[in-house]
Length: 427
Image (cartoon, rainbow, N blue to C red):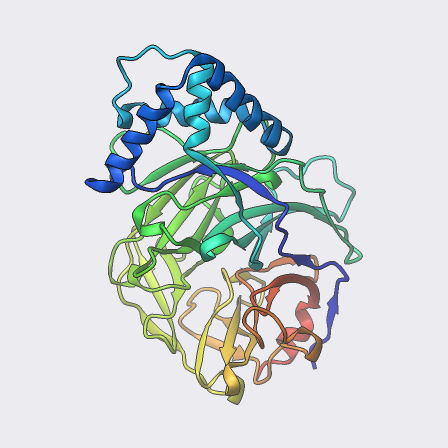
């Protein structure tokens, strides 16, 4: 019997969390859409100076107190759209630049609809903590208008007596900005940077490419140990265009600069891929569901190229007969690799279980839980998608697994469970 110690804290959707986003997605379009954009810019430029000052004053009155350095945001937005509007040769006063930028921005509530499917890693900064405490970093799937999924973060501290404290969110949230393309990198590799004065907890990563247009879903974040012994934080997520899906990688060394890289190969056309936190026998390893039902072990010499793998786990128990999948990166224990799994049973009810893989040969399954360690409780059934509990990654904290998990695709809860109890429950 596995006993979870659940924390009272729960995170919910919050429509007050807003950022400034580019407005109008037709920059790469042609024909009527592009002509409408050009016509709008000409109409703004034709305004007399007094009207420009008055309209800009209204915008700043309405929004300056709701956003971080909004004038700088408008200026940056203007510089972004200037070449596309054919304005390179025009010298415009600052008020006009700001007003043009404002017309091509909008306020977006990125977590108004749902907050769900978290993962957790050790924070890059572990300084200044009491003995036995660790600083953590949560990734969260935030869903806003149009059911667009973004990546948000929260920082916190866990003590050795199972106490969790999340740092307060900053007053302003800011979107990560697109950086200059990297030399000798494919065009579909995107670079982003966090605003210099913003915190990780106040940073939101939005879709950038057409492949990501409708969302960045279910980031499985982990701390990866490179061959040099240094850490890199890597996450696999699903890019959704509104029609097609593909798996991609988020990579960062400091949570200030990020790269978003599509995964090539046959396996990249699927979702729910979870990377092992280090190489095994000189190869990268991944767990994924390649056929919509079973779990596979994949190996690759390139972190961004994955093809078919070998069958690892098939549904066996009633609570997982519809399908099984992973719940984040494998966790390394002395006993082996602990893999949290999710199963779908009757009435499309989701539950979370676990499996143990051999440390040296993860294709060998040493045990799995015949019963869930967590399922949708009566009080947790209601939400956007009822009867779902789901996580994208947990971590080891002392003798426990710290488990953040989404409930009904609507909110996020937290629990601790003893590693010994999970292992004892395996068959």
